[in-house]
Image 1: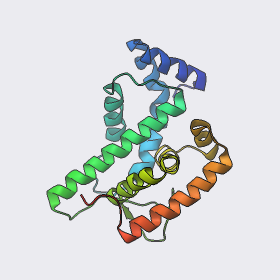
Image 2: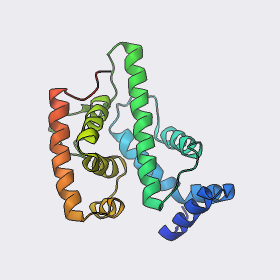
Image 3: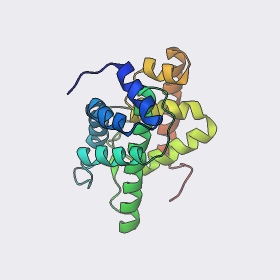
Image 4: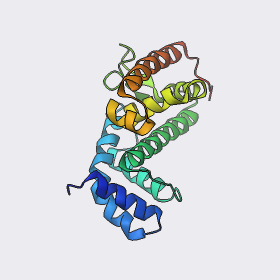
Length: 195
């Protein structure tokens, strides 16, 4: 893996946004390993029988990012946050598709016990998590963004604070409150959607 500076990645993102297609070719090797680590974290929480593999998730996310049109990238953290959201959407879409095929059986499971210690229960449904997160976003968009950046983006408190332009203490409080709220919503099954 090639070592790169955050500034180099940011410069390539800005060049890509500016229309330089070769910047994307130079960017991919620099961000691939981080994206793979993000995907590996997600896939570690999925059932072994999940049809997507880590590499496939990274490649699908890459294709969606490449075809997303003109995103005004702020910096590398913004890129990783958007990549995290894309990976979340891919997993939720796969879970919803599988659920609709099996008429409610065989949900894809995502365990939050390691990354987000919400409950001692062994696993939580990725669809319930997504529904609960969408519900939180309607009530408090910043707290939902904190969860997305921390859980799905794998960012630290400090990196999350930098992106949201708030203090790390604020992120820490939001993180604690959001986890408790999500745990309650998922436990009670009162997520905003009944799909």
